[in-house]
Every structure is written in C-alpha cells, then in structure tokens.
Image (cartoon, rainbow, N blue to C red; front, side):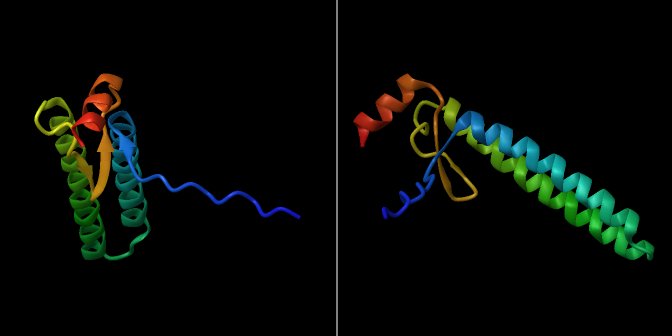
Length: 102
C-alpha cells in the first residue's frame, strides 16, 4: 500500500486572492454581527456585537487596502503581507522580477 501524497501548504497568496478573501470576510463578519445582534436579547449586547463586527470589518478592509497599495507601489511589490501572510502579485512580470531580486 502506498501512503497518500502529503498535502501542500499554501505559503503565499496572490493579490487577486487577497481582494476576494477580504471582501468575503467583510461580508461574513457583517452578516454574523447582524445575526448575533438579532438573536441577542439585551440592547447592550446587541451594541457590543455590532461594534466588534464593525471593528473586525474595518481591520480586514485596511489589510486589504494595504496589500493593494503595496502591490501597486513598485518598491514594495515583493514585500506585501495580509495578516502576516506573504502576498505575491498576480502580474507574472512582477513575480519574475521579485524572484530575480531575491
């Protein structure tokens, strides 16, 4: 019997994936916040849930914007991160230049 091949680990995202993941995460956070606020009985809990959801959504949006800015800036294209995960440009020319630089 042969053992199954080990699963590959994704160690980098590309910039288009970050934009899609960021938008999806913002939508999910807001919807979960609204759902939890709807289920909460006391007004203070509703307010706290909504504030936490908004803070998380803003944090994801800022990270997404930071990646978009870094990818568009020629000097930082090889150094973009999204919540600590390395992000590669989705442009093949930029990828090649980054590989040659390192």
